[in-house]
Picture 1: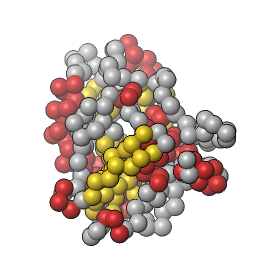
Picture 2 (picture 1 turned 120 degrees about the horizontal axis):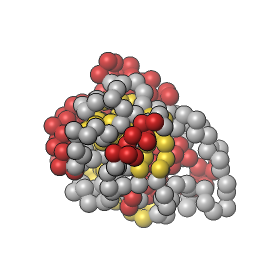
Picture 3 (picture 1 turned 180 degrees about the vertical axis):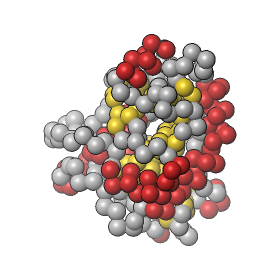
Picture 4 (picture 1 turned 45 degrees about the horizontal axis):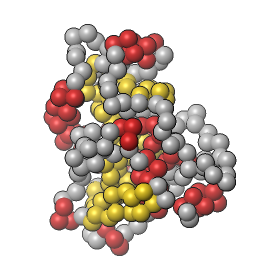
Length: 265
């Protein structure tokens, strides 16, 4: 399969611990120039489809959460024709119902970030994005059917600024606000994709119990558990990608003419 000759409608965004997806000899690396800076994307075959892949933090995990160029990443994927994004995310559990090792399909977020460029419509056109269901319900249903009892079918994530981890008091506060897990990167990635009519589904892997006194959260702990879980996470991603129908058209939340204007920049 030659990636450059295939239509690319599905993308995978790898979170912490997922830095490569394809055989280097059978994939194609592209640097896509965007109005927001360059984005590095790899095209390859997954589950019988040509898929675009990029890593949030770079292949060497050198990009801090608050410094990720989210607009460049999403614009680059949209320019390839992507309609569906399957992403992975490392999260800490703030609810006892989401212990370490849990896989969850997130359905809501609480944004606690600040200062991040979080819209494409900041010049010439004001678009008010509907956000009641930020993760695409159709893609979540597809993913749930593909993974069955292996995943929690829903979950609310609180997205913090990072790169530091939460204090215990903050974790307990997040729990009291209704959050199940905590993460540093899903905002503004998810609404930016929605602004370009791309649906997203996120597979979250719980690395630690963020609010438990006996589970001291550290980068070493998180990366060790992610390394152990990487094959499981990638298998789950592959099953979700395989289940996305070829005629999936994304989400029509913004007028197509407005999306086209952003991509024409």
